[in-house]
Image (cartoon, rainbow, N blue to C red; front, side):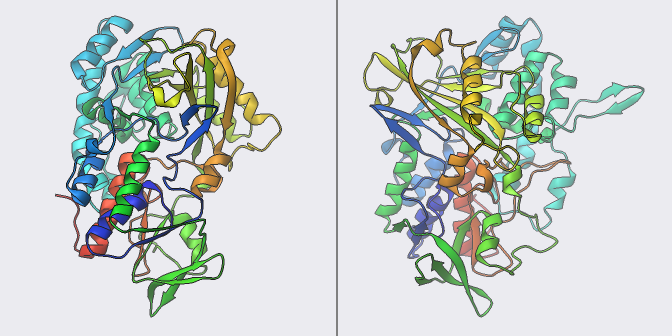
Length: 498
């Protein structure tokens, strides 16, 4: 197995339980892929995902690989409120966790009567899109006739009349403009797309499932930091006798008699295998030069360096965390589409960006009660579109993020002891994703964002993780591991979890 990301480890644990001998070869010195932690001076920070949706994916993993609940190996807690939002006009609202009625009431109170009802009606339509796509886009291998998913928009948009024409929303931004009819609700909706590395102006309408997932299944945090989830999955693999080889870079996939037969490592070592599981279809092609892994009828791999990435700013703060502070606050920018457009042209955007502020109430992340660790995150262009190596570029943008965050946390700058700025270049080094891009989840519809199948044109070679079906995100990575394990164990007739 190539790489020790979350999807790969989920597959490894399941394959080991099924009786396979599994060896994992990881280029870096640790496991977890993008689920990393930065530590310094008694402070600790999650530099990847800060929360988890759909914990059922990992509950299923631990039950299926050891007959014990996820909660027996990590301290999983529901975050409430799920998020606090600060809009461009200064309006604020806190949304309760996994409560549609509570969210409707909170929006009505903060934004005015009727706002909550419009958001609630939107969630009902989003649920219909979820029901239509949940199995084919999350629980089943990619259909051979995947084009059906691309042609049919699962979101039942409301007809919109303009200039004597009736249109339906095709993008997430159009849903916000035509159906929600409030710039703050539009910002709320677009924020979910940005959080998953999607441009809301081009994300398909089916991206409506992203806020639905949060409202329906809640947002969760693992005490000690989300890195604890990666630790628990790694330990489960070790208990099931999975072998890990760190600092072992794979430079080639071996082929014999028309099927994958092993790996070649950077030091020249050849490793024989009956089955090879790799991550990143885009990068796998470099391990099999001249070999086409996907036919013209397949979903082509993304050019990773053209996707969006993230800047993460870790802040070590003096002063105690307020007891009533929200775990996550979203400070909405004034022009999220405009800032992404500026990045695409190689320019640092002038408006304040949309920034996610994570400040967990977790003693494990701070040296004592008189200090606080805070993580700021913003979605940006990857190295493929913007030069993050340019002198001062990273620090200048981090300054903008801190300025934006002060709209929610006054005097934040005065509390900073030190900061660590991480750009897409850090993501590239840790995950191997070209340009440091972050994979979005698979989405259906006319502007579909489907990922390549977990199978390839080379028998015995499979792909797992965020750049293959069903796409990016912690839950999706866990499901990719389940799908790959099913395909390896049961063969092409495998039809997904039941």
